[in-house]
Image (cartoon, rainbow, N blue to C red; front, side):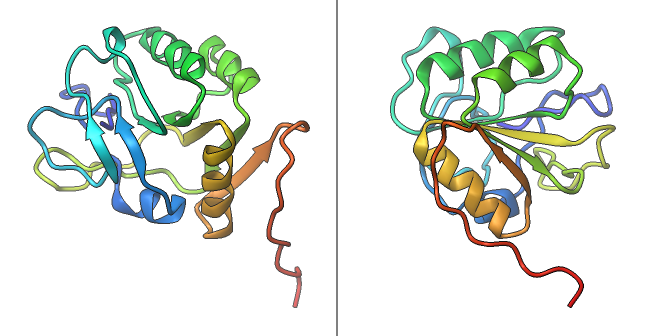
Length: 174
């Protein structure tokens, strides 16, 4: 589930389809799925309530509630303990929770443009005040972030110990 506190009226904002198209993967589980809304998350199964108290399995997608102060830390702690999936968060590089996640991630993708999340009724929201980060945990997630980078979604940084082949960049200035 995508959540964004951009207008202060709702915590329910959903990830647009183009992000999943760029990632080019299917998830086993969406751990923060809305109970009633239809989303674009390509997942086989969904958790819609009490996700932090439930067991997570397989390759997961996580776009947790952003609204409550410091709530992302709890979600990210469980995400990195699970160690297999992709997490979407606000791009708040100076926040302690973001720094902790960055140190644990196998790769990080900074989405180039500000993401206009979808409202529950399907309409697009306004541009948020900051960018969006995707954190990868595990080799399958790293591959998906690199695929998204190659598709033009953003720029990926991988840990030095993450050995993976990457498509060479296009020549500049031609």
